[in-house]
Length: 157
Length: 157
DNA sequence: GAACGATTACTCGGATATGAATTGTCCGAGTCTCCGTGG
DNA sequence: CCACGGAGACTCGGACAATTCATATCCGAGTAATCGTTC
Image 1: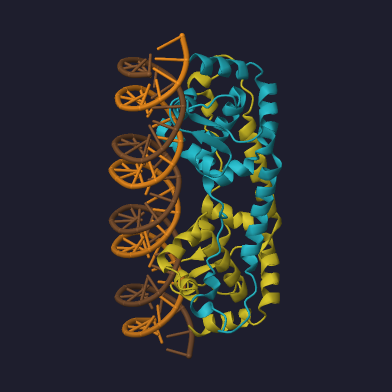
Image 2: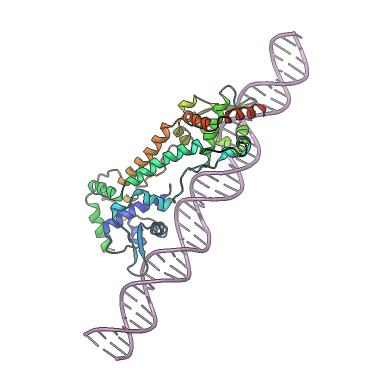
């Protein structure tokens, strides 16, 4: 899985702690975790295309969350970065070469593809059931001082 | 996900239909679905290292299933090809740069990593619950003539 | 005829190229701010 | 003092390299069968 998923998730959380009042530039978000700024910008663009965050150009521009944190699921972010297509894609190799069914045979769904799809659905279901607000809550329980430190740092820079 | 997973799964199923009496070469298995023989060989090696199939060299050599089909799960094959490590790996970027906790702070597990791991666990659970014998049964229901055609083809070549 | 040994052919196994996708970088289009000017 | 206009600077957005990983290929080590030879 792409490295960008982790960056995007943390950045969304950071955006939430900063608050939706003001936009934050990709450079600032990147600096906070020492990430390559231009590349994080690329990931944020993907989030923007997916409608997870909004973006404004120009001075005082940047990114901000497009909707409340409890309406953004892990699935939203993963789909925005990784793309919507499934990880396992059936190439129907059973229909190639001597192993192929005789032409005209009604071909049912590949049992392998079905099973893999079902497993992936379970994964997606878990991701869709977990909102970023859940994550935020858990993170704040584990490190109560983190949000304040973050706000201070972003206010000073 | 790697293309090889699909190849490996189909090949295991084919091996099961042929039966464990005689070994089948990678070249024959590849020809049945018009796959690149040398590369399928590589995947079968991975299955061999994982103990899913056994291999013998020399004339009359080849691969065969190492254990009954109902003791091989989808997870076994996927892990053999893709590797055992998780798809989402936490780089702990939260501990880099200004966002890092002060040194000495007891760092709890990253909430994001936990949630992603939980989702991936659900995926693994589904894969581990499905044996290749289930798949075989379903495939035979959908295409009852396939096993016979396969056995005939492998007997003649 | 049977047993033995060298030869031979065939297989896996890993080292080696190739291609594509992810990762990383850069510059231009657009836009908001700020400052100077005029009423 | 206030409104307006233009220059300037800053940001996102997408086009452009570099590196890594998956894909594909090839050749050598090892092994079992085969054939020839000998008892």
